[in-house]
View (cartoon, rainbow, N blue to C red):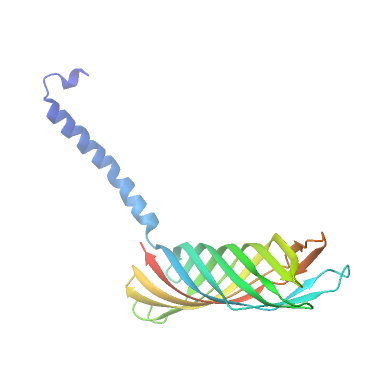
Amino acid sequence: MRIFLGVPKGEIALSLASALLLAAGPARGQAGSFFNGSYVALSGGVVGLEDSQLDYGGALSNGNVRFDAGWAVSGAAGWRVLRFYRVEVEISHRENDVTDIDPGFAPDGSMKSTTYMVNGYFDIPIRPYEGVVPYIGAGVGRAQFTQDLQVDGGTLSHTNAHAFAYQAIGGLELPIIPRRMSVTFEYRYLATTRPLFQDQGGFFYHADYDSHTFLAGLRWGF
């Protein structure tokens, strides 16, 4: 501490502040380079769910469920690993109402899914970052379901399940501010392995899940 004897406190504080700024400079540069090419995205749209067969495996008669068009929302965070290649993590939610259950009358209910995906994309190099950029992608992850089925004046099932999920993606990116903000339009085919549900009578059944989703969204780059 003797080196500070006779040195004004203001000069000591200024020297310490300068040293801290110099030390923080490389850290800020490293953080900036790490986040270069990263982005977040939000989108919403409509989802069509294909008919689902309720397969009791011979224990009971099988049934068939049809659904209305529903809605979907999605949020993602990604990173451009190479000029035309991106990876991202995504959470999305889809809901469809029941329109018919065969056999039976007075059908009602819904199918809800939440997916947690890891996606990879290839941006097709047609005038990249200047005009419309088409892209394709694929993803894998996990889906969680809530199925609510009502028929014949009663509840057939109100149950949860999960399954392995996979999807194929095709889209267009329209830059608003190059490298900073874009509008996106996407089609996604999302399907899963057959989740296992349990009805109100305690019987287990498998059900199909195959969906077609059309999304419009915004993407913000860093």
